[in-house]
Image (cartoon, rainbow, N blue to C red; front, side, top):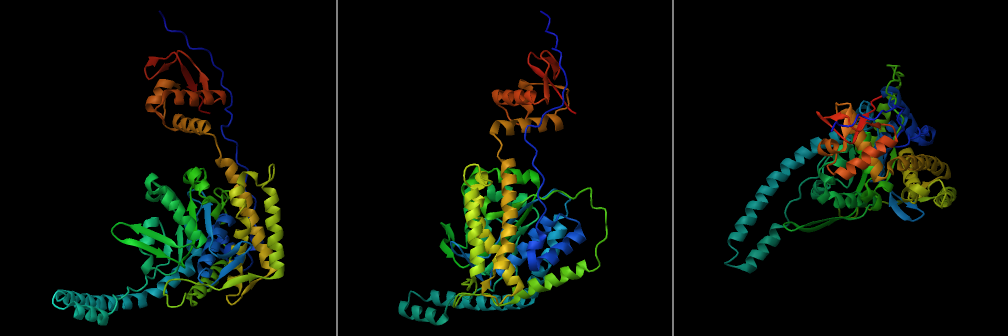
Length: 488
């Protein structure tokens, strides 16, 4: 019997599987107050989106401020630490903008190194002597235990290694960070322009994922960080502060923003997340204001100055913080209270923040933290937050809340639609023939279950990316069930 002739097909314009995400709103740069000048200067030099530049500037400022003060919120005392997540394409000049914003931090690290190297050499000598004496004492322990105990008491505790001069952590694992906390300063930054390595690498493998998410959440909260290891025993580290800015490409961000566990653990809600509209293709000026670099230098000096101030350490501790609290003046409290009530109402059914309740529930706290950072940058000696500063912080927090809604709507995609999107990408980038069948797609496509593959292909047909072509030749054989791939 002759094989059936392919059924006729009509090519029509494909319909998007996933609705287009609306453009981001302009960043409220006026609300940055003392951080506006640096942000505008970096945006001028790099022509990167202002929201991207603002994220790097806010992160640098939070890192410099978090060791000096905590902040009063409507829910109690919190760190002024900020976590930021900026989604931007490759070529958006993320690295350049971040390098300019972090210059003061890097300069401060550089200023710590000479003293560290001297202290490390002294520690190496002292530790070698201590270790040799301890070995000699223990060698004679069997003869006179009482004398041994007295000798060990006289020897004293093991010398402490000097604190390392690095305060910025790149793509280290959470386990690695906690392991080294005894020799790290109390105020640290997790900053990387390769966010996919941090949020999609070893730390986020299935066996590490829950611990990584919980650790990041504890870092934002200012909670104690615990380490449980069979060989090392149990250790707990209190009084640490962490700020973070993770710059990540869209492909890696989509997985993180749609991660049910990250959402369920509340980690996503702790990030001030944005995806600015790209400037690629419109960066035609190629010059910048001659004063822009001077403003960047001034910001670097300001940040280095804040980092050089004595941190608010707990009594007798060298790397455990106990910061005094920035309180809210009556006007600031009124502004924050009104904002919190408005956000709460917007989370009701049909409200603006109904689909982003996790983030919205923390928006008032985000505003208080931002207000704390702006206050400290403006006046490191300040002990209260004003209503004017809180109003600025509320404007910034509202921008990130609206971004959370925009990105959440784009990230919440049903599993069968995600399958179809993956199949579409595979067909358009990896499959070279004009026709495809369910069997061949299951053998060579993104997933190997035939029924799952067939459902994805059917959805692509419904949206016009495929047209039924039963009887067409695929991979050298005529197939009863086949489709033509629409490539344009």
